[in-house]
Amino acid sequence: MLRVAVIGSGPSGVYAAQALAQQSLVPDVRVHVLDRLPCPFGLVRYGVAPDHEKIKSLQNNLRAVLEDERIDFVGNVEVGSPGLGPERLLELYHAVVYCVGAAKDRRLGVPGEDLPGSCSATDFVSWYSAHPDAASNGFALGARSAVVIGVGNVAVDVARILARGADELRPTDVPQAALGALALSRVRDVHMVGRRGPAQAKFTTKELRELGALPSAEALVELADLSLDPAFADPASTAAAALPAVSRRNLEVVRGWSRQPPQGKERRIHLRFFLRPTELLEREGRVAGVRFERTAPDGEGGVRGTGAYEDVEAQLVLRAVGYRGTPLAGLPFDARRGTVPHAGGRVLRDGVPSPGEYVAGWIKRGPTGVIGTNRPCAKETVASLLEDAATLALRPVAADPLAALRESGRRPVTWPGWLAIESAEAALGTTLGRRSVKIPDWEGLLAASRAG
Ligand code: NAP
Image: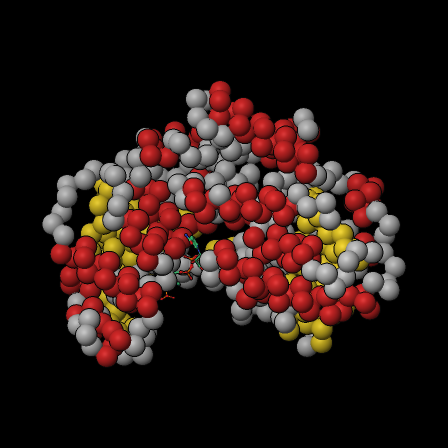
């Protein structure tokens, strides 16, 4: 039997487990999918916005994989904690596939970044997703004006959640405390700001369009920003023709908005471009706004500063400038790229493949792509693992890794424990007159898991 540990139960981990279960080269495979949290599904549970029900429903596909008889979910086990590093894992399993994602947010590196009222979008997402490590002290929702820095899909998510009324979020699984805070939110203007132009924005068109179709908020763009972009000014230009299809579609959407008269809705999302943050402004010890430098296209897809500045008032600033991977003790790490060095998914130690160690997902290729991108990524890694399987299987490993984990004082939450958490969340929803509502804290999750 080939025993494999997959570390992380987000999409890349589950797709890796699926690829291992679906292959026929090595018939006798047993996979343990370990996760630090007692709940599976990683960013599908704790990153996909609650109002994106269709993407959330991917959870059903991931669930079917974890229910395969050759695969076991082993939650509440932190790899990298004392006594459970890469070395120990190789005593328990023939192969280990690290699918640990990119958990941290990137920094802006400008003065005022840590003022009260300025937070990372990652923290905000964790809060409305009921991540048990999320900061419990709320966000500055007494703010009337918020700035979201960055124009990727995370920026779109947080801008949309700020712009939705609580009534629109009540039917989702958003935790009760976050729903209550959002119901009291006074935010009326959300400024989502890109340092480059609309043609270089990272959001996808479907997500962008959604901002223009919200019941209680409208999307506004400023012609002065857009006309700096030669591809916007002339859709028939060679600059426009050279753009990827997604950028051309995005330009069409903002072009449409630029022609639309204001609709007078309760909230407004202002899409701004060619503004790079230089400083977060302070008043009475809190963030009061963001100073931006006006940029201009440099003709090569980048921008240059113009020396002109614009201040945007904001009592809440969310930095949505991308995720970054973090090192795992005992595993090599490329600090510049925020990934684990690899060749075809085989972890490289000093440039040489390390037998039995693999990576997949964001920690392998960086925080890019949509959920589906993880499937071919995991398949490539598993193909490498299967090539090595005959040699790997010769190494003696623990007969029962789960028992070994328990003997070392860990209390794994296995599939019945997770099902019990799901039941408790459904029951909580019933009590609150809502659909299933997520439990937001460690204590509650672990207590619920034990009931199973
Ligand atoms: P992202 O797509 O890399 O976008 C980051 C944004 O931050 C870019 O606009 C970037 O501008 C900007 N930025 C970076 N550094 C900056 C700085 N110092 N100052 C100002 N702006 C800065 O990252 P993300 O939004 O976190 O998304 C991560 C991944 O998750 C993406 O692949 C995304 O598609 C995916 N995701 C998908 C969905 C969905 O499908 N619904 C939802 C959420 C996330 P530049 O381009 O100029 O660097």
